[in-house]
Length: 320
Image (cartoon, rainbow, N blue to C red):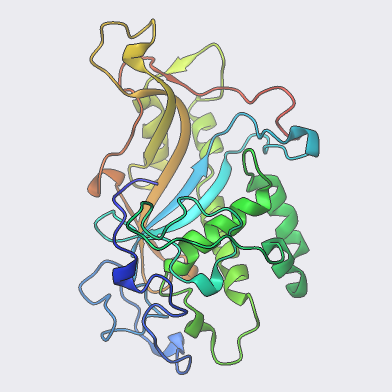
């Protein structure tokens, strides 16, 4: 995730509630929603359960992996689709915090393993209880689990660990997913179900593979692309410039880029769609935001034909 990590301790990182508010009287139908990151999106001015006040710059994030490392266990990547990564609540300046509520820490391997991502933060204790996937069973959400096992896929570890990581690291840092928002008699793990459903809804709203394919951009081990060829169709379809992340060698370290000043990376691996939300992000009323409004819009090389959008490894993709 991009951006500087704000001091988690400053924001009550390990408390059971971000603001210590009551679990009564959060009837959002009675509230006038405000835009996240607006002047009115502050505790004391709005109900923090009804308009996001803790984060406010949201990122719907996706991954393009070419293998999982657990193919032998049946963990495969979705055909003709990017993979879901998460839904992140950055602060309005692009920085962020993480693991904001240890009472809802279900990540068996926290990473980074402190609330600030470095030695200055509070250590995040690994979770040792029942797997987060079991939280969905009492709700009868087996169709949701089936979808998650197809599209929300981890690499080098079980997918359920990624789901636990995304909830624990990010969902706990939203005011609108905060514990008091669910009332005094909340069904345990209602917040987990709602976060998963909301994250999936934004992923489905951004069909990256289809948008690129419609522009003639498809995975290839033979053809390279220029960054603009990839970024423009996604900008046109989503309404704002997304962040594109690349890994692999830097362009000026490759044979094709020898002597170039372009030090961008050359293997396409992720995309972030930025937006503000009106009221709760759960309600899907959003305004797209250009990624470069809060930082860089890419780590990829800009040179002509510098970016690889590789095919999935044979045997790593689920059959259509």
